[in-house]
Image (cartoon, rainbow, N blue to C red; front, top):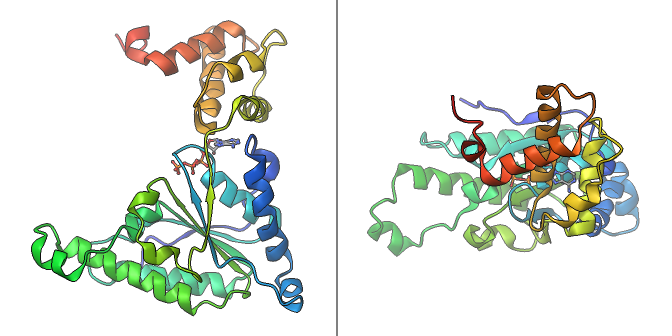
Length: 277
Ligand code: ATP
């Protein structure tokens, strides 16, 4: 049994133009794109890219988007799997999936391998004594450890400079097994954080390209007043506002549509009466 397989997207169709508000991160990742476009050039220069890059930060800040943008910019296949998809109770299944993933990426290199929720896989392993004592050290935990060990073996055996970039994403850095972070594994960490006001404005602008906004809408007002909001939340706001515009029979998204969508997102549908019959 080797299902589910990694989703492969030949070219993700996503580029850095789709990522806004986190320019420093994008800049840092440009090097990976250069590498994927011409790995040989790096090899000739005697330099190597990082083995694995860990994108770390709260949900919805654009980690998956960034990974897809790297593959899209370089025009290389993108292999995506979530850590939870490797975790099976059947012993050996997760490890087989890891082997399969690495094999396929190797054959089709240059390529990007992206493992989302890597904490599901790489959570701290139990010490031997904990294994004896912890009641819930069950078959599931054992299988997860086998899978994690397989990932470590594959990462160690993979020559840097062979045209595959490994990207991991987590919002539980504290949970990660330190073995994953050693040199030669996910040895570069990049923090992806919620954007500041200017970043929020840029994200709203990127996402407003797909919708029709009334000229009277000033996105800066929203950007300024939504501290802590992530890219995913801002994208959702515009999507919900578009829905409101349709409901209200508007041809364009008005301030009223945006404000209703905002109320709904901040106070929840119940209090707004949307959830009631
Ligand atoms: P999770 O930890 O839940 O997997 P994530 O950090 O991987 O979250 P994404 O899945 O990349 O977040 O973001 C969800 C969606 O939010 C994206 O597909 C995109 O539409 C929007 N988004 C998030 N961050 C940005 C950004 N910086 N610029 C533009 N859009 C963004």
